[in-house]
Image (tube, rainbow, N blue to C red; front, side, top):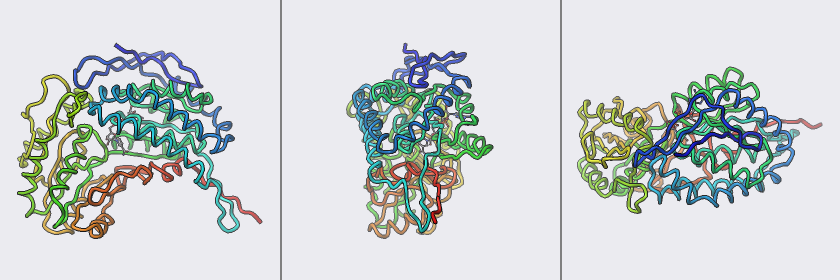
Amino acid sequence: MKQWTQHYIDGARRPIRASASVRIHDSSTEAPLGEVSLGSAEDVAAAVAAAARAQPGWQALGAAGRAPYLLALADALEGCAAELATEISREVGMPLKLSRRIQVDAPIAAWRATAALADTFAFVRTIGNSRVTLAPVGVVAAITPWNYPLHQITAKLAPALLAGCTVVLKPSELAPAVTERLMAACEQAQLPPGVLNLVLGGAEVGEALVAHADIQMVSFTGSTAVGRKVAAQAAGDMKRVSMELGGKSAAVVLPGADLARAVKATVSSCFLNSGQTCSATTRLIVAREDYPRCRSLLAEAVTAMKLGDPAEGDTRIGPLLSAVQRQRVQAHIAQAEQAGFDRIAGGPDAPVPATGYFVAPTIYGNVAPESRLANEEVFGPVLAVLCYDSVDEAIALANGTRYGLAAAVWAADDRAGEAVANALRAGQVDVNGARFNPAAPFGGFGMSGVGREGGVYGLEEFLEPRAVQLP
Ligand code: NAD
């Protein structure tokens, strides 16, 4: 069984003097995968001190001097891409084929795309008699979740480092494989000591990091519940925050849209990574008269999705991360049963493999807008279908939760779709199945967060404008 017992601080691996650890399991065999030692506030202090020492030198390199390190990190990660895809697949349950493409190749491309911004991004701008310099915020605490571990780490580290910030990263203790790969990548890229520091731990380490006086910014991705605590703590000394939180994203199918395509795409989004995706479209909003046809299309779409071993090529849905996550999702399903919604697929007794943290893809129809299922993030393979009687009502339903991360609109023509997209309070809206754009801003309205990641928007999060007026 693997032991994760090291931090990476000031350019070197440091043993964790742990008093506690967490055991993680293979999501599809339930066999123990390893034990992660949890660090302490003392370790955090050492990491922050190293980052603070390194920051002026890193800033002095300039973006053009820093970008090659980002490219070297991308190359190093590419060298272990196959291993990493397998490790993440075992940890979180995503089918291996998708894991390689989404969990590993996409973030590596993002490291490179961020490095390229060094050539095009205007760090100095002239506005009238002011010279505005976008200066690095300083020392950044990055705290990330387990569901797309390398992606979420990359979305913070690549722009923070390019901006000239130094970073202390606390990745999720529940998906540790990426941590070790990243340490090796820092060594291979010969990143100057202290520029990137990794501390392993749970809530205690996270809290110590957020509270540290020498942290200037907290970039957090995780649940809304924890994000709230982190933001409140950071507000104490006015640290800048960036919050990427939960979602309950809607797919709105307007009258006359291609219902079959909309259903297929919604089901794919909702069940991607077994529903462990913040931006998953977990609410399907359809015209009442389309509901009977929608119902049978949904049932058909689920039948075509193979649930099983993530290592097998034709598996579309793997297990969840852990027994704890499975139990959480099962509780949501039990509640939906109690509420008496129209079960279209799955449910509490649907067959699943005997071993592994599986939950069958589950769909409920005629879900009441005020119900928990229509409002709470499940973070598992559960789709809620809601019906509307007018387009205004469809928009109101889509905007009717406290979240606002992503959405999809399906319409008979793209312009009509765009008009409705502009009425939605969501940070990302796809019209008629348009593809994901990694350079577009990603983030949420409302309780889905504060700030944006991706492209130039992601870079600006880590920059502080300084205006100098010239005579
Ligand atoms: P989580 O909130 O439990 O944990 C996130 C991170 O915060 C982990 O590293 C955890 O150790 C740390 N943490 C826990 N308590 C803390 C505290 N008191 N102070 C500081 N740090 C603390 O989330 P999770 O279960 O790892 O991830 C799933 C959640 O993340 C879902 O709600 C999902 O929607 C959200 N998410 C959002 C996005 C986005 O971009 N908006 C992306 C992925 C995941």
